[in-house]
Picture 1 (spheres, rainbow, N blue to C red):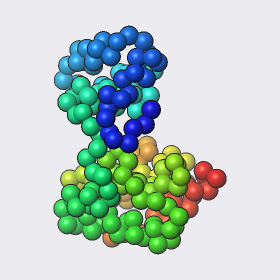
Picture 2: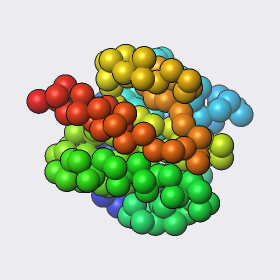
Picture 3: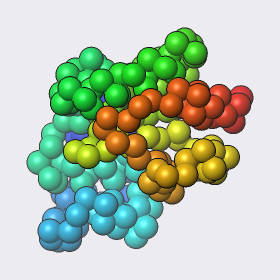
Picture 4: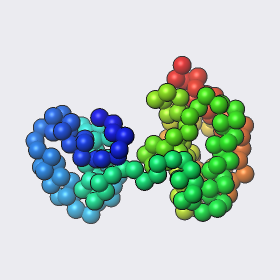
Length: 184
């Protein structure tokens, strides 16, 4: 169940119903994993117990002491939290896309700016210390642009650009165009 207020405990009744047992048992299981990192905790719940990403994230983050998933209410708040070069590049990326695809809505999802059409995620950017991670929300879209991504760090679902990247609007627009065709 998605929540608009970011309260992770609202997932608990659904977790109990779907996976059985009291939420306190699931909290104990996550705590018993010790100091393993977030991805391993999520993988444990997903692979060993069939949790969805949303349920696993809610439980793990609750155990880690985060009672709310909301850090940024708006994209403007997100951009304001970044250093100047990273904010400038991030905003330029979205400006290049929104000028070509005005039907896309810029929202905050997973505490990152995401372009969506309806409920479909089309394109997202996440800032790290030394790079921006770009997510076209499709492995097929990445594979279709493989030759255009040479020289960049390409992962399974994302690729990385420097925080001061000279925005390649034609590449970004091609990624979004391909993703939009995919969801029609």
